[in-house]
Image (cartoon, rainbow, N blue to C red):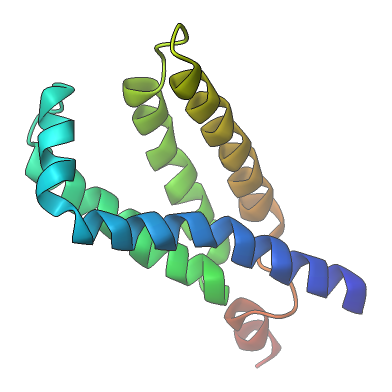
Length: 130
């Protein structure tokens, strides 16, 4: 049980890290991200980037600590679908193809997390023990 709990914790932390990192990066490069989204034809690009920051940063931190993990993992997975389909379907470009498959893999990890939860080393587990 301890080995499984440790593996779940490591998996959750590493999965969350990409969202936390890129959420913070979007804050630091906000104008550039808005310009990129606008150039891709995203409607309301400023709002879209704010939503992306909230989902990635807040959602990533919630997964990191294991709070409301199943719900948040599912929400981020749903968020990832249009982002992936909108920005990473130019399969003639190797970078886009790689980003598509990376996002698909992350999507799978999020679904596993949504199905099984955060594990024993989490706020969710602590709250369930009460």
